Each structure stands twice: as C-alpha cells, then as structure tokens.
Image (cartoon, rainbow, N blue to C red; front, side):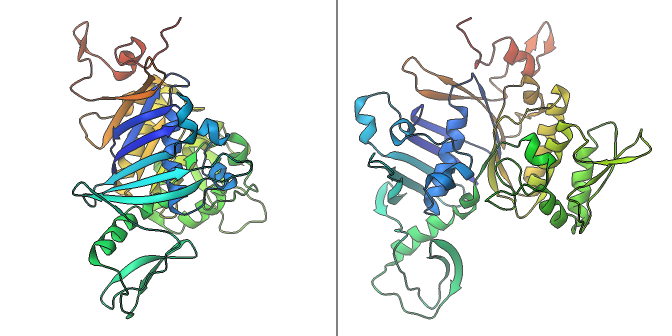
Length: 392
C-alpha cells in the first residue's frame, strides 16, 4: 500500500503531507480541496503510464482545467513551476518522486519531466519511460514496452546498467498497482442503462460497464454471494439474478414484498450505488487503489454508516486501498478509529488559502458529552472535528 503522499503546486494544494491507511475518508467544507487530493493521485497514475493527455485525465476522474489553473496560483511564480507529487510505499524504504510540467503554450500537454527515487537521503534518476533496457539472465522484472508494463525473463546481458539503477527500477515498479487509479463518481443514468460503455474497463468513472463486470463476477460463487450479502442492507431485497447472456441488458431483482420481478431500470437509485460499490470492492479486475468522490450520494444516513463498515471489511479481504470523500456525518459512524488502517481526515484551508489536512484519531476523538460516548457524526455536527463553514 501507499503510506505517505507529498503534493506540491496542485490546484489548492501548495505543500501538503499526508500519512494514509487502507481506507481513507476526507471530510470538509465545499472547496476545501478534498477532491484535489484524489486528483493528485490520479495525476501520478496517469504520469506513470505516460498518459497525460486531457482525454485520458478526464477518464480517470480529473476535472480538466487550463495548465495555469491546474497549478497553485497563490503567487506569480507558480505558473512556471512543475507539479511535484511524491509517494512512499510500505513495500520498501524509498520515496518515488514525480515532477510533472507543462509549458503553458496552446494545446500543450503535461509531461513527466523527471522521475526520481530517494534512498538513504540520496536523490538519483530512477526511470525514463523512453529508455530501452536489457536485463541480466538472473533477473525477472517488469519492463516498459510501448509504455505498458510486461513481465519478462531474459538471458541478455546488462549493458552499462549498475545494480543501484536496477534497485531504483524495482522501486518504481512497486507502484504498478497505482496505474489503474480512478476517481469514481457513479451516476444514476450510467448505472440504470447498461448499454452505456466507458472508455476505461472494467468500470468507467460514472459506472459504465457494470453489467459485464457483474457477469464476470458471477462466475465466482463466493464473490457474488458477498455482493448479495451487501445488498441485504436493503430490508426489501430478496434476490439478484445476473443473466450469463441476454438480448436485454439487465439484471433481475426480486423484492420480497412483491409477486413480480423487475430490473435495474425500476429499482431505486441507492440500490444501484450499493451494487456498484460491492462489485468494485470484490472484483479482481477493478483497481487495487481507487477513490470515490461523494460516496454518500443518494444513500440514507444509516445506510452510509453500514456501507463504510462493509467497505472496510472488503478492503482488507481483497487487498484494496480506498480514498473516499463525504459530506454526510453518518459516514463517520462507520469508521473504527481504533483500527490504524481506517483513517479520517478533516480538510480545510488556512489563512493563505492553502489546503491543509488534520487526521482525527481515537485519542483526538471527543470522548464524552453529557456522560455518554459521543458519536463521530455528532462530534462533526457540533464542530468538535472542524471542517464546517464558519462564515455563517
């Protein structure tokens, strides 16, 4: 997993460090910079795969704007400065640093200007995506072939490549799981009309491709049963049938109170969102690291609480790392702050307008109010945690 993130010069983020866990929830005012944190990760993922064109960035869930506004415009110098995003993984003791630049000319694209690894406080070039490399006969590594990763074993001899370079190469490959990072913002129309297809498989940013993914998951009885268990959060739900092949693109849903079945076009919006989240969590084909913006959309407050508990369990079971934003206080009641893999962050802006982040821990949580343990949702609404507007 990624354990630390450092971001410089990205939108409202001037200079920010965050230590993260497996399930990370960001709350705060509208415009505080929650989504910008998610976008910085998506920006790194795009840079690592050398796909920094606007079309691909949009398909990852990044809100496209001009190069000038993509940088932090807190001073006149920022327009010429690159965006810097650094990651630290628990798989090794190295930072992987990305420096992404745009020359601000019309139609210009973002480019990965440099990629560095830091080990033992020493900065060295790490990997140039255009470099062609030969590998030693005893080394089996991933390599870049036409800008995509491929596992190879070769008996060719290394030419002018030393072991430190190979170690730095291995470091960059530790972050391969980040390559598929997407900020999901599921939409009712995409989830209800299965004929819509996204440009990214298996799931598009708005939920396109859900039926095909469910058909793949249905081949695994254990995983489809986990999805059904998640859908049992709805009191009325009885069963779900996913046809292997059908001329009509639909799933069959049974309401335990009704004598007839219906499909996704007739069910409620919240059911479709939970179905989407469950499929996203259990599938081996969905990203290992991903984000969901406004995960509380269309969900009852109590359902929000149960959903977060479910996501935390599934994230451990299927080795997913998740980043979520929310404005619903009930989301917080599903977090276990005694579990270090579950982390809550309050995002705000300082006096200079820079995005800042405060982690809420079990020790910092308000313990009592009127002799009773205070729920996190109540603590948020009472202003104990911060992240609420103060101008009205």
